Image (cartoon, rainbow, N blue to C red; front, side, top):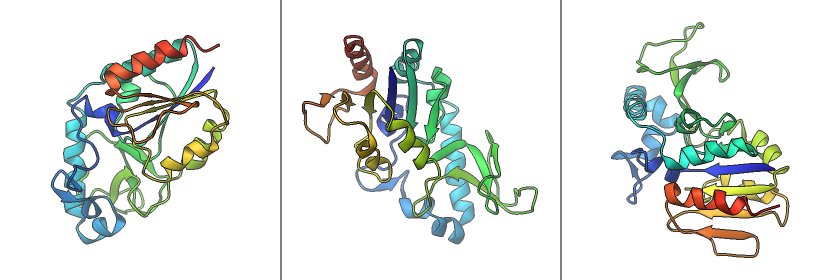
Length: 226
């Protein structure tokens, strides 16, 4: 079966990565627009680069958790694609081989001149680090107000899926939140979140647990689907 998994910050939180925004709307003490918008980068590039350098260091210190590993194990029996809003590489480190990062990847950088000039990056990006054309490098992150290049690819995948798993995301952030409207009607949908934002229905099965315990339960339920 083709299984599409939509994941958000709740999957990585159990590995020790903080979710995108705290309840007060700040991200690591910063107004999100200061560190996650083209305007913020333009007004204070050094602050933005340092912010992501710190996030990158933190990412390299954590490991995939039980939810990441359970999702990777699904590939043994099914055709699994993970569409994630997360910018970490924990799905890949757990063993998942088909991962689409809607919001970019923290362990990559790109030129401010050419969007498709992307390279691997596991160290700090500093002011003065430039691409082959002499333009400043920046984190390979989709900031507020920027296009989401892989959204069409994600739509094509979810339109042909047999099952959808929604893990650790409220599905409130667009354009990712709009993906479900492209899923085939009447297919099974599993929603894993300790504070689910939607109700049970004939189509949607809610597992109101954290990802590490909820995902294994979903996998057991999938075994019963013929």
